[in-house]
Every structure is written in C-alpha cells, then in structure tokens.
Image 1 (cartoon, rainbow, N blue to C red):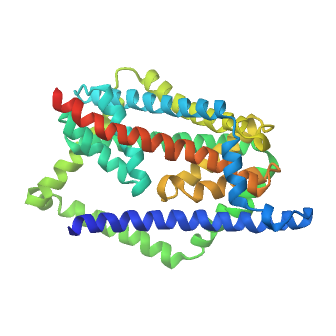
Image 2 (cartoon, rainbow, N blue to C red; image 1 turned 180 degrees about the vertical axis):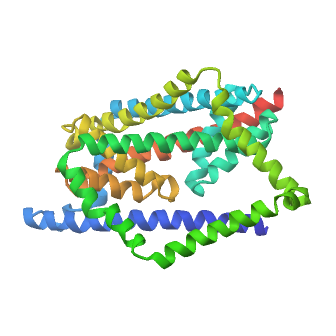
Length: 350
C-alpha cells in the first residue's frame, strides 16, 4: 500500500509540475493573444485562445502529422536494432519485439515519472530475456551517452548555421560564460567541492580491499562490474560503422520530424531547414527537462525558438501542441499500452 502511495505521489508531483509549466506558458500566450484581439477590435466573446488551439489542431495538415509519427516509430525501430548490437556483444540474442516493446514502455513510463522509464526498461528486458539487470542498465546508459553526444553535435550545428538571432538568444538567456565565471570567482566553494571529491576517492582507494570483501561491497562491485560490461559492450559490437550509422540515423530522423512538422501548420509552413534545426534543438532541450514528456518545458522552448523567426506566441503554442500531442501523448501512450499487453502474452507463450 505504501509503495503504491509513493508511486502515486511521484506521478502526481511530476504531472503537477508539467501542468503548472504548461499553464504558465498558456497564461503568457493568452495575455498576448487578448492584447492582439483588443488591438484588432475583435470582440471578447470571439477571442478564446483555447478555441484557437482546438481549431488549429483540428485544421492541421494530418498528412504531415502522420509522416512525423512514422519517422518517430522508425527511430524506435533503429534504437532497438542498435540496442540489440550491444546485447549481442555481451553474448545475448534478445528478440526484436522485446527490445522494441520495452523501449515504447520506457516512453510511456516517462510520461508518469520522468527518467523512470530507463529503469523499467532494464527490468523488463532482464525479465523477458534473462539478462542481468545491471548489464541491461549499462547498455541503456551507453545508449544515453550517445544521445547526449549527438545532441551536443546538433547544438553545435545549430550555433553554426542558426544565425545571429540564435546566438543573440543564447547570449541573453543562457550566458554560460558569465555563469562559469561566477563559479570561478568563488574559490572557497570550488576548493571545498574538489577537496570533498578527492577525500571520497582516497578513502575508497585506501579501503578498497576491505570494501571488496564485505557483503555489501561484493554486491556493489558485482553490480558495478555488470554495469561496466554493459557500458563497454559498444566496443565489441559486430560492426562499429553500422552502430554509428544507427546513431546518426536516429538523430537525422528526429531533425526531419521537427522540420517536416512545420508543413502541418500554416503559420510555420514557410520556415526552412535552418529554422527546423534551431526549433529541433530547443524542443530537444525542452524534453530533457524532467516533466512528463517535456510537458510545458517543450512548449515554452519551442515557442521561444519560433519567436526568433517571427511566429507569434499563440501560433507557436498551437504548433507545439500539435507535435506534443501527436508524438508524446498519442503515439507513446497507444504503443506503450499495446506493448504492456502484448509482451507478457508473447513471452508467456514462448
């Protein structure tokens, strides 16, 4: 009972944060929308942002929405194939359906409690394929490392081709140089952190034999060894070029999802490949923020990116909702639930 209450509390908190962020973004856009209506002399009764969003979603070009959904599913197929390469390197041969299904369940779980999906994904693949869970976690960790590397590359490309507006936005809103300088100006804090880390490392090294021989130590070292095997699996894959091809393909398809989605909504249909790259970067950063599926944070950052290219706030909000609900809500919920139903049946029969 306590476990269920704890899970419910976590889900409620994260959903609450997401809903609050989404509401704040909505309120911000609604104020601007009402001001625009007043300027144009539009009656208050005909000036509802909610009604506009519903109309925009209803009138979207669903040919392009479906194309983005197909591209998203392709990324998950490729992600499953890449994940299988790591398991094969460890001596396991998991079934594709289990790999793909657990990935979809991963996304579904993240809509409830952000970042919980990775742990659930490891547990399920361990259960269905008899793979040590720590090794599964290691492969997932490696999977995420490559995602972070690709995101860093994409951000670099966006900075190169995004133009002065993008660089000006980064300088005004992020200003990493100033933040780093602020940390460096506090030598006491910096020294304390470094000394603390050195003390932990020294203690662990000096007491390594005693730690290894203890019951807890053996278990921890066993988990670390398994996790390390999973992380290192990438160096033993059958084809490094194919692994790299899968990795790049996932992110190229992510980019085209963002760019082609422009054509689903008239106010964004004039935007080009460069704008698509910048919006893709902002949207990716929004999804990284720990809210359910990037709820609220995705809408806000996509709106910020589109504002740089002259798309007004209410239209940007509608566009973000078209993409968010088609991918994060519709696809992930439908296929996540289907996977939860199908995988136990398939694996029970076998």
